[in-house]
Image (cartoon, rainbow, N blue to C red; front, side, top):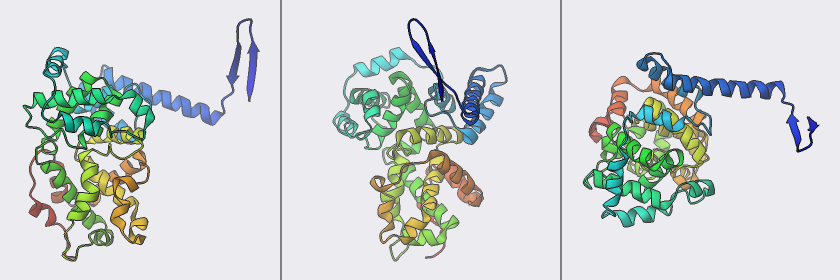
Length: 331
């Protein structure tokens, strides 16, 4: 229903909101105001950060929140950024990984026209080459899963902010950026071990090898999701919402998110002739970030404390496979 107010210059159409829609709009404004007050309020910084983490886990951010880049940088611990330093790294030109980076950049967000218009291949190449120069080419940043991570940051923030956010993310989970990607491999193994604890029937269905080896599940399903922090799983707006929680909780949360993804598809996987194909990137259902995050948080209490400790430490410390598979019951 609408009322039309005619003036000499224009016709103004004022849409009459329903009470439900009005309450929803006011609630969103109130939540956004709360986020802004936590980012720049007068309360002690430690209290504001703790409250902000809790608010994000409970309510999340609006899909088009203008505060997201500030929230992410705060959660990652990004402080001062040096434009001159970044410009100097860019001026050094291409690295030995440039061709691989550009080849992967062309495939990033291929089916998302809006993201392709906002994030250019040249931006991805500049940021990742600069990161490699900064690391003296000792950091694994040229893998196929690194471009979606970089592009997701670029969708939300500037090139300069993206560069320093990637550096901060690497500090938070150095094993994920090691040349052998040890942290990603350990994370995939931890997903399998956690699944064996919370749902043994589903674990047995997915581990199709007679000897109980979970490597096929780890390589085909868990590894790509963890290496890209879910940025390879569309739609992008849900990846952004999942990253809100990921940065609020910590990088280890990706393991629980992957676990929740498996458990949430339990019926489909148990009924499927080849369940592993349903968990591959191209066959995944569209992400529902809020449902996935809530499911992941619900599953955490079911994880034994020693296994949870391994999940918590694997982004920063090398965890051996023997320690992880110890938690799996014999098939």
